[in-house]
Image (cartoon, rainbow, N blue to C red):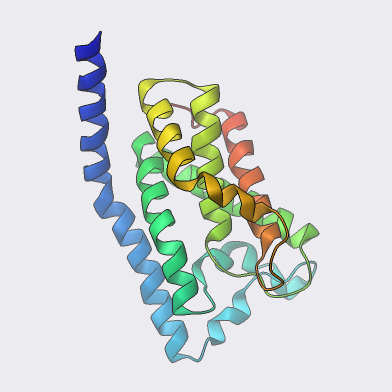
Length: 193
């Protein structure tokens, strides 16, 4: 029994190492976009999500790729890298679908119910990944999902507090709707395991 558990954990960490390059590439793409945006004096941020405005609809898709500063992007990069690495454990196809559904569900909810303002940043996606990994561990327990859930709860559990209003400039609604989207994706049931 112990040998089986140890073997499963070693396999899990091997998968993490394999997925690290893909997660790093994804985060690298965000940095390239941000550098271009910086050179354009943040004009790309006009593609952010503006709630209940027709011109804000493209932001449903584009807002996770846009950030307000290098600090904003840096603070999102580490959790995004780690959580995406974990999401990739389900396979590339599943990771793409989980990402698309989280972006669409959270973006639509934010467009419908968010405060006025330009909502940008990958925080909603990060919160969606976190919720997906935590709830998936509970709903579909396996060595892999439970270990990932425990790691997420230990290292990123404090992020859950960001779903509550705190700072005027922080899109807590984006965090909340990302978290809700991550839960919804688990209960759709297509991406479990």
